[in-house]
Length: 65
Image 1 (tube, rainbow, N blue to C red):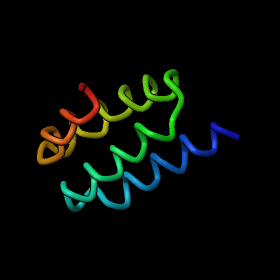
Image 2 (image 1 turned 180 degrees about the vertical axis):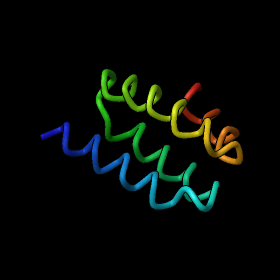
Image 3 (image 1 turned 30 degrees about the horizontal axis):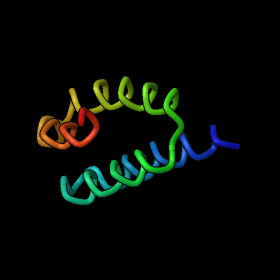
């Protein structure tokens, strides 16, 4: 069941990636809802995804805290 939340989170982040503020807000929600090992997977995916979208790199500070 939690795997579904992980995929839902990734889809949500992709949909709001046009706006860094919304992207940051979704990242904060993900941090509350995902399990620790899922957050590790999400961090890896975020590094890959934001490599193509440099305007979102600054949003990753939320995850590093």
